[in-house]
Amino acid sequence: MMELSSSIANPDVNSNRSRKKRRKIGESDQNQPQPTGVDVLRWRTQTEQQIYSSKLLEALRQVRRRNEAPSPAVAGRTVRETADKVLAVAAKGRTRWSRAILTGRLSLRLRQINKKHKRAKVVASGDIRPKKPGTKKRLPPLQRKARVLGRLVPGCRKLSFPNLLEEATDYIAALEMQVRAMSVLTGLLNGAGVGLPANPDRLGSEQS
Image (cartoon, rainbow, N blue to C red; front, side, top):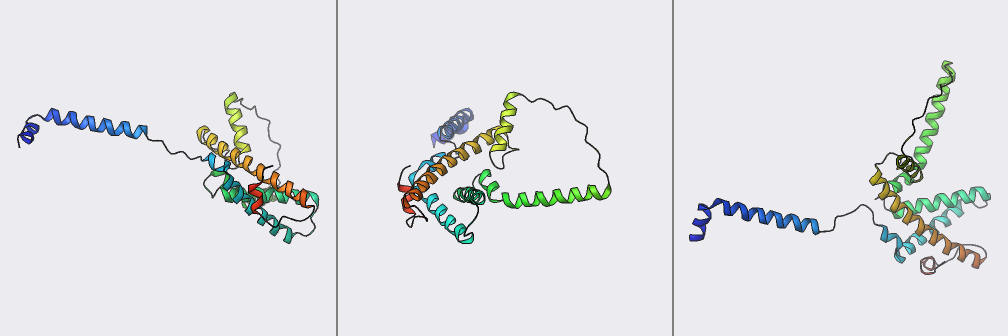
């Protein structure tokens, strides 16, 4: 009872105590690890490589069933597109680059259709005038490099620089895992001579 009355009589003491509590809470929050949008380590695990390899092998089998005897150029492009699509699926849509790969075909088709419509409209109207060459403003070196990096990472052309670095870090780690898995697959195919290996689990366990 005396403690309650003393706290009422001394409001400054209460305010000091509340400030100390708030300060302790703030310090503990700062000491906690902050969540990041990039999980690069998961691309370096053996389990992730095995899952990706199994999905890639199954996707390649389905592509082979649809296209019995494609030309080498078509086969190479198909394998590359399939590998990238399976990689984007493995990312589970958590990154911008994976979503861009999954929707890339539709976007490309829409751009081609819009380009044809614009060209047909210009020809029909007869308004064909040469564009005046404009003076390009030279960007600082860092912005130029960031623009080039944004072109290399799918779907990241208009990102801010910190977000672009996060996406590029995750994308590079995923590509490294893709190279390891495809190197193991190539070694198995060369050893088997023809056909695809029957056991997809071997892809993730063997090292290139």
